Image 1 (tube, rainbow, N blue to C red):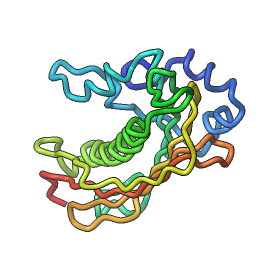
Image 2: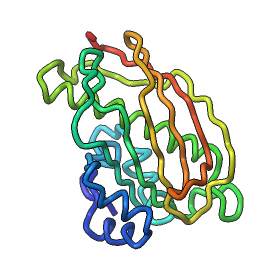
Image 3: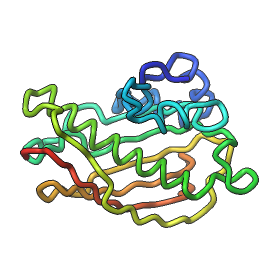
Image 4: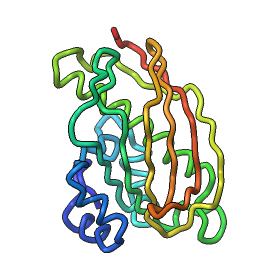
Length: 198
């Protein structure tokens, strides 16, 4: 299981046994970031991902990676345009036998998009551009297309990209696939960032 939002060596070893995961994890062009919503909090914030979906039967581990370096689009508050997230799934997320529930699939997409946006807020905070005070990121819509069932248990790759930002509205696209070319689900979403002075 991941520790404090970062993958443990046991998780990396397990994922590295899958060739396409190993290629991604060992790439010099990508680096791990903290998966903030996997960290339990006294306030019960993020409890859905930090507790309910953090079991051996649900999401066994999540590993998030961002490209090395930063985007040059810092003016609009976007420093990292893309994340790749490995989700290691158990059969406790099933809808049908050996198939993840469609609502759970949307949950992965929504969380991946939110992680990319919150990571950019964290970067802005680290650069002294703004504080966390009053910043909230909320899903306005998430249009999802199911192409093939997501198998369980399995390890899947979620790739999420920021398309554009218009004031406090951020538009994103994401996919869930098997890492070898099979796309299970795609989504486009719009999130609203509240409390931002950008």
